[in-house]
Image (cartoon, rainbow, N blue to C red; front, side):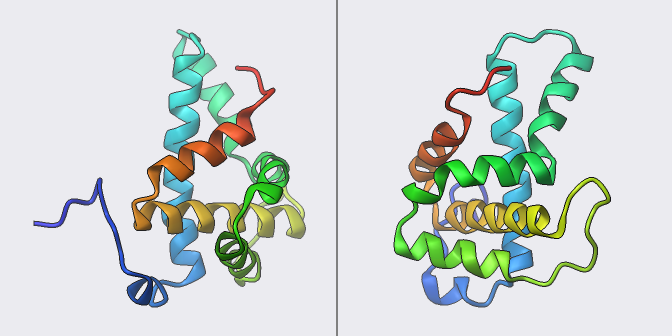
Length: 136
């Protein structure tokens, strides 16, 4: 049985996954991290939890947060980020510019790639760098 919570996909197999596929997975990884961060912030009302989560999982917010970690990325991570940014999305939300959406997609692709590699410590390190100075 495959352990989907503790994956470690070989690099060769990783190349078979499209950047948008990585972003699809990374979107969920990022949202779980944000939801955990918001819950740990002590907000109790579900309405407030949702508002705070939505505040960080939009393309403009993700793009802004991504800028904070770019200097922290290794060359390999930068390559994955660039590949995600260059992916051709089918549509762009009204609330985001093309550049914001591409940067958010790049961030999600990076998080998806790290998740599939089983690099949970690195995900936590990058997420902590992004959320430094942010308030719930």
